[in-house]
Length: 325
Image (cartoon, rainbow, N blue to C red; front, side):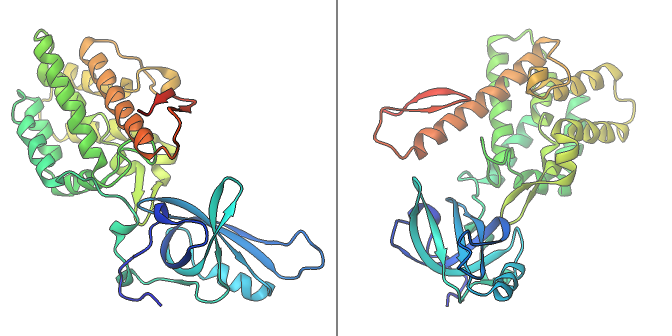
């Protein structure tokens, strides 16, 4: 039994016929069900497993109803479990048929969380240092506001560890920081082309546009939507966080406050994309397009790199055809 905390099998490497002997995080599980055949006793259940390389379904085929339910109740969503089994073909994909013995919940000291949630390939501390340097290039009162926010140790640690999304883009630890830095840099380049824009407003808006995501997601062995994130969303949370921070800043200009709030509210661009307001001044438009550009580029790069086909194209409903050569 694997006990040394080293995960040697990853989902993207599994092939039909492989023997599975490893740890996986539980994304969700479905309650035990009876077999369709009336002559077959017992129950079975399925679990969606994840690690940093992908997801796969595993099924437990029980002979005894009581024992099957005992196994099912021995772990929960978000836990890491150790299992043995075999990879089998199912439909057009693969799944794991679990052995009846050996499935168990792992203790935290038995595994490394980085095996289950991907971590940004770039140096997170270096990116944070670059972001702080850019903050110092802004004018007052933007500089003091941003330094009070990103200089807050608790906020900064959460910001560095947060993903930018669950699936589409920058969906890994450090992803929010990487995405934010990219959006800020795009805004800086736009300012070089259009120096008449308010640099400090635009860069500050880019830095805070997604701050609500540090509370929108729960990051453990999987990335999940938090209760607050599900009920409010990162735009609403971000506005709350900004206003709370401004309230601690003496004599902060009302118009600048309104513009920064507007950038957060409008950074998805359209009502149907989740923004309660559409951009109403040039700097807000730039933040919206910079955010959308970086997200789409990262998303399509990932689709291209992970495409498992020899065809020239793949097709996704949200972006259309993607040429792979």
